Image 1: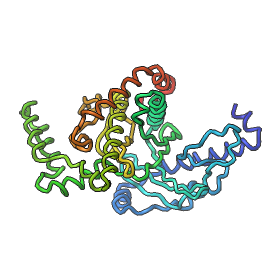
Image 2: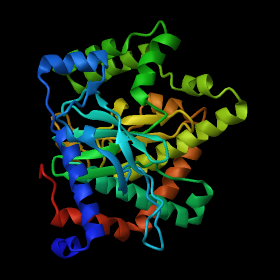
Image 3: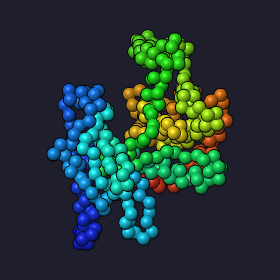
Image 4: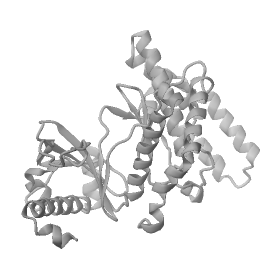
Length: 362
């Protein structure tokens, strides 16, 4: 089939450009650094130049290739003449840490906008991409249902493009802050008499490792931590949204997003929901879940099994206001679950792809 398409000169040029671009991305994703250089570059946050060897630094004016992480509207004429194409890539990238050493690059589109992208290697992004498609489908289903449409329920999604079984590109979600980053700064700021997060972790870890530890003793230690470490996420809204109406609307927006993400994540068995895998949009206060690599209840197979359906810790609830999980959160969860149950066959159709295209680590 590809050979027949390549006979058309125009299509052949597009395919060749796509192949070159994909190879350039994969080359960057596979780029390794020794441990010393890695630590220095991550800690200093200094950009790394592409140099003359990396192909991505040579990419310029790909007029036929749209920016990968920008939504491409459907063109009924099938000509796609006015696409936002790749102008060039900035000459450097940054390392942001992590086991697989992802790189952050910036693509300049023909519209003059900068599109930040995360290039990941040694990681199979096909599961992330399929789950992202499921979330997009959930948004369509929520829009079709009168009750959820009235409540404006949706999941924030972003582009995930697998390039090979071990590499891919992820759209960088702009104007966000990791949930954990805010909490780390806010706890000592607003609760100065509380113990530090590291102390909480050490208390729990010490009790966990103690030989004579019992469920009751673990609960006692946990209760001590709770008494000395109070939630602070309410202050996020007080800091950023000074107008009372804006403050109220953002809290509602946050609560709705948490409810939809929680129920949908539970249905697909999404795990690894630590504080750095949840972003908060600084403009809308919506919660955005990233790193969808542990799903389908794979979290239950970890060394310390994840037995909870979704993350609903005290700080998550603290941002919901005085009603906490009652009212808006509970009702939105119920309505979302009704929609997912009613359309379960549609969701299973997409998940069926894993039967015929299993993941690399399976």
